[in-house]
Image 1 (spheres, rainbow, N blue to C red):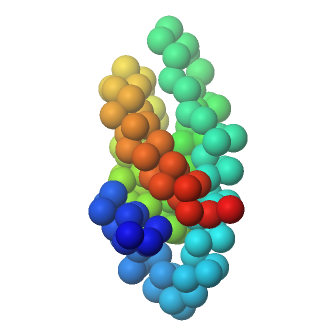
Image 2: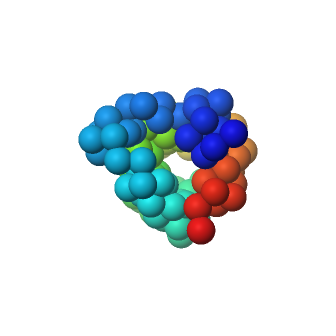
Length: 117
């Protein structure tokens, strides 16, 4: 199974992502590789007892935007929910969503890393 088919099985809307860049698979694959690097350097942390979530909001917003542009649907939806909860003053609920989405995100990142050099 190739990268794009594997991503489809993980819930990524590959066809929409390709449509956004006029069907250029090579460019899409390159952008996916860039997303992996960005996701690794923008790890969202929601610490118990913290009162300032500015950094978590900024990182979640960056991941949400990039994931949305690439149609990485599970990641986009997860960070959308996290942002709404953090902005709504619900950090415990946001942390629970983060804990739920991180394994999915890691699986998608591993899939991309194994195919993109």
